[in-house]
Image 1: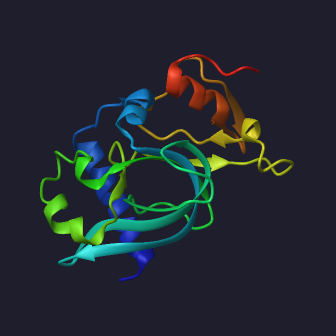
Image 2 (image 1 turned 90 degrees about the horizontal axis):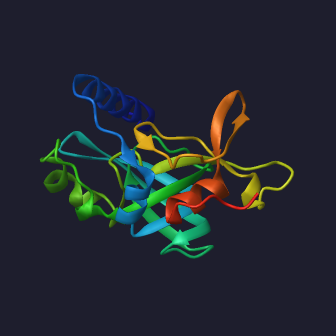
Length: 187
């Protein structure tokens, strides 16, 4: 079975579980507090992994572009496990130790998949990775970056946003400042 087929099946399974019993929203500040590493990474490698014929998600390597908590620029980190990230894309990730990521609804997941996944995993089950869009004019200008909001995450009230390709996205610098201390970023 190809990686694309496995990823599609996982996404479908996750969607059907969400439809069956909705997950509660989690405040971004709570995800930040739970995370050991918070950074913007460029995904440089990824692969879907499975145990006993059942998917365990994916393993990724990402190069840190912006370290917010527990990470330094150019550091390469390994993390998992949502199988939907794209190689070459940038993501705002919130990562915790794999064994500390709560998967109460899936008690068989940890024992079956632990040996296949890296030590770090996205917090909030699938919510700890949000795609980052950079400006063509200034790809290193953090104030021009935007973040595509993840489902079931409550963002700080008043976080500035702007339209990117017909969708509202959050202004990276404002979101991070409000996430960390609750105050708005300077304009």
